[in-house]
Amino acid sequence: MGKPILVTGIHRSGTTWVGRMISESNSVQYIHEPFNIHYKGKESPIEHWFEYYSLSTSAQTEQEVLNYLQSMYRPSLKSIFKNLIKGDVNKLFTSDDPKGNLFGRPLLKDPIAIMSAPWLYNKVDCDVIVCIRHPAAFVASIKEKDWDFDFNQLLEQEKLMKEKLYPFQEKIREFSETPPGIVSQGILLWNIIYSRVIEYRKEFKGKWIFIKHEDISRRPVEEFKLMFNKLDIPFGLEIKNEIIESTEASNLEPLKRNSRRNIFRWKSMLSSKDIEKIKKETFKVWSHYYAESDW
Image (cartoon, rainbow, N blue to C red; front, side, top):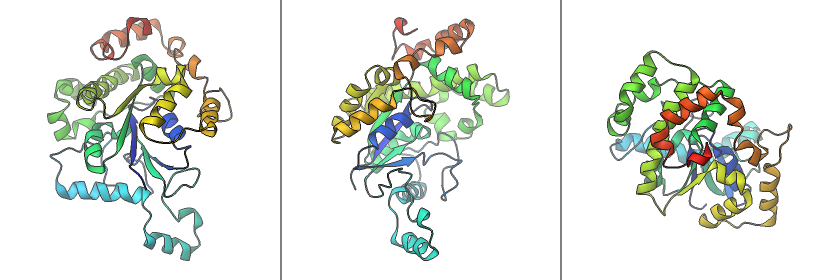
């Protein structure tokens, strides 16, 4: 079992696409969102969305989380034997990998782990990929899904608020007490997460992989090949063809997309008023990632 891989970033930023494509390699095992608090299959110690672990986390909590993560990709002999006795073949192991690759290099696809990415990098010794997506595209995507966010999930995490999110404290408190519409929620959440990623890019330059959703969409084969090379994973014809197929629009499989057309789909999904609001209120952050021409 090789070095784990964490694929993170804001939700709706392409983490599933990136994770699934890398997991096409027979040497990689796909694991879906261990930080998701709605995951009921295991006894998870994760209590909040975007749970924050850091150097100040207690040793006991650290061990609980590490044991939980390891249980996701290291099936114990006890659990294997127990399920064999029950005849429950589907529960022999805990992997989410569609290929049934139970002993490959673990890939944790988890946008919800973004706040704890530095801790995971140091404690699990994993390679980290951070997916970045245009703020208007993100807001359009969650608006289409009608996904709101409870900002109490952040406010209740005292260490996170004190150590990292204090510049947003007033706004987070306001939104937790009186939730606004999804556009305003999306703006704040995008600013929070990609403000952290600005710091990650400084701290982990040359160590982590930072990739924009739009770049993968324009040049999927080239960008994935670069990722595979950095991760020291062979990039063969079969994987190349799977990547090409994943970018072709299809009504049959949700993961398939017309990737180039998808880049600016938000322009037809949002009103000009909403676009201007998003552009203005995320400027201090998006200017680190995008140019005026990207609007």
